[in-house]
Length: 224
Figure 1 (spheres, rainbow, N blue to C red):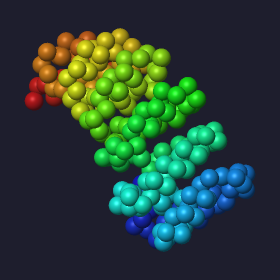
Figure 2: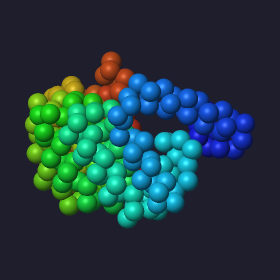
Figure 3: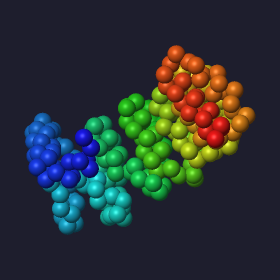
Figure 4: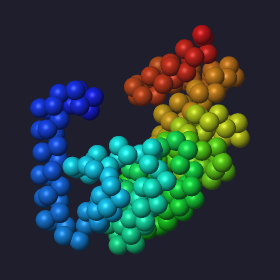
């Protein structure tokens, strides 16, 4: 059952909110110095009305000019205080298309040795959602660096979605990297180039279901 179903049923919505409230209350008792209540208080002081933390995301991107600088401030505080779960929480406010202003900060944090792997993956996902064409060279540096392992996955998909021609040799090389092979197949498939057919045929009968599925999907695109 999705959020749309919950929103259509007042009883389910109320139950969902009450459950979330209880979880938030537990979190605050266990983390009395949490930054999230401070962030929420700032929003309430600005006139935003909500019952639970998840509802604050609903104010974006409409209220980007007001909320984004506040979310960035608390993201930075969470990072400085090594509150990585809360850092990931504030990352959620950056995942909208066109939020280019946060990209330099996110790329710097992606490279930082202090950033946990799970946060690094979330950062790459936010970059994918923002879909900026202005930082292609930075994306290529990341996807070319094998030390980042699976944390490159969403950026590999991104250069495919953006159809970055100079990414093609890198994507072909990444077909040899099992950590990101599936994503390289998907990205190459987005180009819809007939000359890539041999790459997809190589995996179309693979025992690995993901490689097989997306290779065949890419071949279908070429056959249309």
